[in-house]
Structures are given as C-alpha cells and as structure tokens.
Length: 263
Image 1: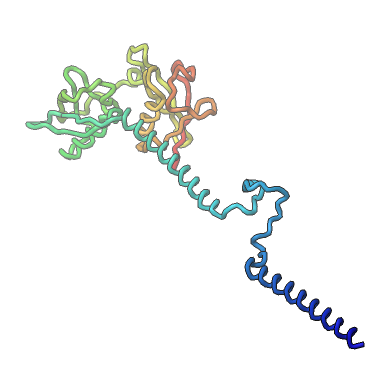
Image 2: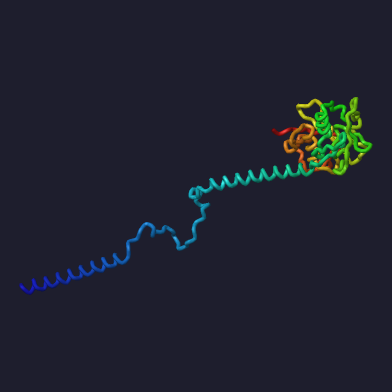
C-alpha cells in the first residue's frame, strides 16, 4: 500500500512541474510580445497597401473645400476685374488725351482734351473765363471753323497746331444740320442712329468703317457724359461686341441701334 501512495505522489509532483513550466513559458511569451491592439487590425481582404481614392468616400473629404471655394471666387472676381481693366484700357487707348492749344488774346490757353471730346467743352471754359456768352466764342484752325460739335478727331487736330479763338459781338456761325449729318463726302464713313428710352430723338453719330464699335460707344459716352464702360449697344436685340466692326454686323449706314446705360 505504501508503494502505491509513493508512486501517486511522484506522478502528481511531475504533473505539477509540467503545468508550472508551461505557465512560465506562456507568461514569458506574453511579456516579450505585447497584445494586439485595434490599430494593428486590418479588415482588407488582400495585402494591397494602396490607399483608396477619396472620391470613393465623399463624406471623408477635407473641410478645406470651403477655402477652395473661396479661392475660386477670388479668382473669378480677379478675372472680372482683369476684363474690366482691359476694357477700360481699350477705351482709354482709343479716346486718348492730348493737349489742345488755343491762341487767346495775347497768350495761349492749353487744355487737356480727349480725342472724341467735343470742342463745346473748351468753348464753355473760355466763355466762363471771360464771363461771355458761349455762343459768341469763335474758334478756327487755319481756314476751317471749329464748331462746338467738332472733336480733335473730326478736324484731324495735331498737338503741334494752334487754334485761334476770339469773342464775336454776335453769335458765332453754327454747323448746318445737313452738313452735320452727312458723311462729309467720305465713303469710308457711315452714320448710325442710336436711340434710348429717355431721349425723344436718336443720336446721329459718324464712325469710320475700319473702326471698331468701341468708338461708337465712346461717342455715345461723350454725348451722355458717362463712362464708355457703362455703355451697352444692341442691334436687332443682340448685344454688340465692342471689338467688332460695322461690316461684321452688316451695317451700311443709317441703321438704328439701341443703347442702355449700366448704373
């Protein structure tokens, strides 16, 4: 009987030793390698490390889209400003300023004047200077009368020329309407009618066939005392491109265009 209990004790000691050794090995293994965390878990079905395009997950796109939209708006505004500046530069290039010299009394009066600006403005300034009636101010360039409706362009004025001026006792001659509305015998010119809702009579304006419609817009602006960029011309209900020429619109003269002033 003692032998049986002795063998049983040896068996239990051996199993306890195995269990203790297995536990020790498992503990050491665990301490050497930390447990797997959620960051180490991948749900991909393959080993491809290529990131998924953001377009597949539109709701995960960065909120930076707001700033991108703002940038786009800025670009649009800048583009509009650029176009507006380009148009202004075009009008200024066409309707450039010059110095007009007028022999007046014993001296010379110099005026900064635009190419298509009427001499009526210079006549008005001279009349105010002398407290005289503007209808009595007479201007001439050599043997040509300079009428109030004339412009440096219409009389082909050059900066080196001098216009003579004086005050008459009676009213100065006026340009006959028949002459004003004619093309001055120049086959390269046409006369166009420009009408607007606030005027009973349409404007009758001349321009060269080789010129762009921006010249007509400038002349309208000079008549209406506004900026050329605010002028919109329409022909047959269609907005006229200021860069086109009369022949592009099949204009031969005496056609009627509509005008609107943008506020």
